[in-house]
Amino acid sequence: MPLALLALAIGAFGIGTTEFAVMGLLPDMAAGFGVSIPLAGYATTVYALGVVVGAPLMTALGTRFTRKQMLMLLMGLFVVGNLLTGLAPTFGLVLAGRVVSAFTHGAFFGIGSLVAADLVAPEKRAAAISLMFSGLAVANVVGVPAGTLLSQQFGWRTTFYAIAALGVLGLLGIVKLVPAQRARAAARIGSELAVFRNPQVGLAMLMTVLGFGGVFAAVTYLASMMTEVTGFAPSSVVWLTAVFGLGLVGGNLVSGRFTDRAMMPMLYASLTGLAVVLAAFTFTAHNKTAAIVTVGLIGFFGFATVPPLQKRVLDQAAAAPTLASAGNIAAFNFGNALAAWLGGLVISGGLGLTAPNWVGALMTIAALGVAVLASFLERRQPGRGQVVAAGGPSAIAEQPVPAARG
Image (cartoon, helix red, strand yellow):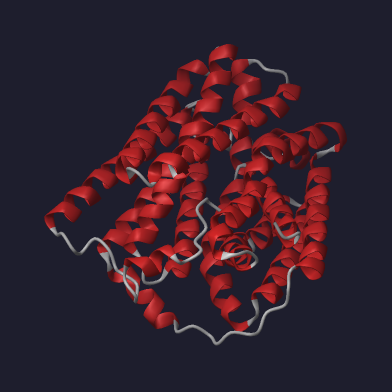
């Protein structure tokens, strides 16, 4: 595999780490600024909202530049955002830094996957894209626990300095290793947007908002829940986040294998499992052994929803796969923002640190209901479930599409 893929994987590793890092840093950040845990949770909410806005905006901007130029711009912006977060003298500036970092998220994974596919022979494209996305998976197993450890030893700001350093490394790798490309003509955004007239596309994105969003209702407040409810020492949060990350990797691998064979059954199974474990977490959080198992299962079922959710959107919006992919990344993160905000509301309302688990369970049940409704409508109107790209179904298969969430 070309060394340029390593540069892309490093960038993905940094972005994945900064997205999830707050779940291990939240108590330290709250104490450092003298704010409540729910207010500190806005560091997750605004990041997710930044992705919602930034994914389509930066993807549209990317049509004016070569892919290499756009990746360099995105990594530079990523470094600035994380440095701003680490240096921020006020919590408001922390939130601003998180938004700047978030603007790079969706476009990097969308554009990066296309670059990865172009670096190799057609028969190796899926492997190349998978290698780039491995940086995101490793971030949840290694990057987030390492960031939590750095925070506990040297302060939470050190974590964001380290993430910024990863961004610099990724930027240098892109500059040196990614080959230059010719500029492309700007795409006609109107024809791309037309695909969203299909109601099945809207239903698929609503599943995404509610389905994976349920995960963030719980994990945003994981550190506080584990230390104040379960009774773990703060140092335990390091390996607890690693357990969650291992669950994510396992869920993605299993679901990726079965989604191509039976997409909707896989979606039903993963959403049902996620709703059950999130509801159970309200009770298992009071027992250390049960809590560890539940944290891993939330990661497993949470990421098991990602391949079928992503594939469902791309199947329904096959005429505009790039925009649909960016739009679904935005949908994932809108769900994350909504869940983190709702989780903070129930904590502030005096319902306790385990109350966000019920928020997540109810969101996931709603996603399951939307999935059943979408399937019912599709059966009643055969032939309207997909928008087929020019060239027929084979044209869809030739598109190098990111298969995991950015």
